[in-house]
Length: 408
Figure (tube, rainbow, N blue to C red):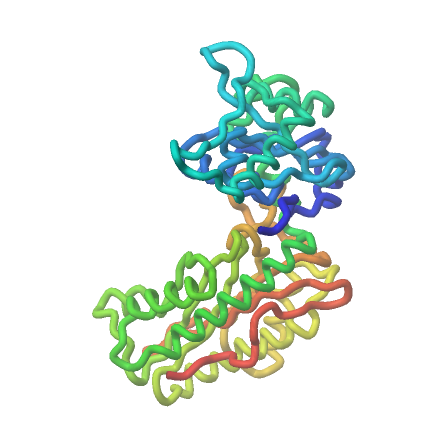
């Protein structure tokens, strides 16, 4: 298994937190814990809110602290992190009574007449290693209070669970706007995951589409995309197809029709996002012209996409290219950040609820350039969307762009 370590870009986190006057993030949401530590908190997802916590100090040279139960640490084969590394672990056990000190560590023993499992000793040894440096706490809240003791009283929390575990001491800020800003600029580990997610997602969508024929249904296409995603180790989220009217009328993919697809899945929590036009049989000239307009915009943006642009600049570049090409076609040319969520970007003014911001593009961002055509012809509709990694002086596509449309 890969070494447990923070996924987030700690240098960016330090800048964002310092600018906001926050000494540490205190996190209890599963996705945020995963981003902060690399540990996927299964027990929280099963409904045990507050069973796992993470503390991210503002100072990037201080380790992120993962707080989890001793038994879960052992049962899930979580390693003993290196001393002075990027991650530290605080364990807790339930006290013997309703109050008191931590209980003795719990391990699984062999049944009467059985044999010890040598692999079990690996997990047991890792847990005992953590406990040898720091004895277990009686509960998650006491472990959290110990974890934040060195970081002042100015915390950002992502849920009421985190605030409750802190006893609402000190000054609390909402963590979500800060986390969204941090997530926009990816660490090297996140970039590697995004490469895999984007390529897998596009390949799964293409394979699903090419398995269809006239007479297939949109539901069969959705199920094929889900299956192809699973074969590649991903988890499907959705695939939108055509218009609602076409799907609801009888749901059949018909010869002579064209339709848009927008396919989204994730791998290890990181998302791919891919859009194309599918022609069923001979392309209709009007729809093909709309595809050409989308390609014109997409290619122009690809040539100029680099650090320093704002989202509004990207839209302008695409619109200007369409106008210069003589296309009387409306192409959206929208941009959004992609990562742990399909739309993974800070909201305008640090708002808690969605309001689109005109973000400045920076190196190590991953963005979607989203070019649906805002027209619907009787024979179909059009979409074109790719994921891009922003480099120091330009951009790099994260999915295959060789086919701006597909034919079945």
